Length: 513
Image: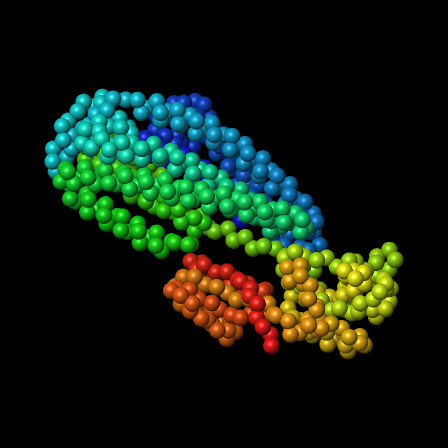
């Protein structure tokens, strides 16, 4: 998935919010349209975005060819890497532009906060003293009416909330930047050709996810302080002015937003980011109505611009599902009259994977190395030298025990005297034929959240009669599964049917007696 780079600079009440790319280049903050450097930077940013979109479209087309054309994968893989590097270079250039654009906007906002404080006349409710137009400022909070009408403690809290708006914006900017980088890394991880490269990219993805979890927590804490203190102050003043209609409207808007947040919970990349943008609209609506009431035209116009831009921001970022890849060499056993292995191409050593499960057929254990001809043309083969220095020879590679048992029958029919089923689970070796009564590893699917009808239907269709047990309020266990792959497949189907559910596959020890 390619994600358009989203950077946002939000100056509540004083400036606008920028983030979504637009075809028509326009100043993101009223008052900067005559700044030649600023407008030039915006045009260059738009040009780079068009280039990125073009390269991204080509990349998507090449990925389709890479998937469908096995013969040309080497060529397509090289082209994918070239296009990814071009996109990275474009995004790096855009990042530098965004930093300069943000600096100009911030300088402009700060310079326009230094105007005298004042208040305008209100329409309706309790009358408010009318002040000269020159004493009105664009930033709502810094109009003198608030300092005059609020207690010292409440006004200090309101100013602190306004100051923290920039901190919240910083969290949002960093979250979106990390999200985009995570998206890029996840794409590279999905296409990584080797286990070593995939492991490195997987680690980077997990790190980026951890960073965004921390940012989301910080955003939630900061934004709750901002929202609570701002809405308290505004509600107090509106009540003091007798504006019951506006208060009723804001309560209804807040309730509607709470319902929407409840419906979206767990469906986006971050509940904190979703909460920020939805409740930000509530806060700005509060501010806009209060500015209109007090006759603060400059603040009202600025806030209306913020509202318009908030409505077009795509805050419903989809979750990036990072499924760990296992580079396990599954392969059925076949036989060839022509030798598969030779002196130049000897039987390879078995690779032990640190994660995942793979079954093989043990053909024999010997004191010394054996020739490939001993194994009657079977392939693929591999060997391992055990702790006692003996040579073990294995055939095939299977995802499930059932497949391995069928392969064991096949080998017996080919004249192998004692083929044995063995398994590696997360790097741990066990011989199932010699040790069938040892503790068996089983798997289950754990589900948290109320089960929707679609989830129940999926469980009935995919779980093949396995028991679904309730283990707590809106917590369920589905199992058991003999194979992790089977449990993961069912978990994936349930997750697709109802993304709001929290689902994970866990393993546990089960006595096989």
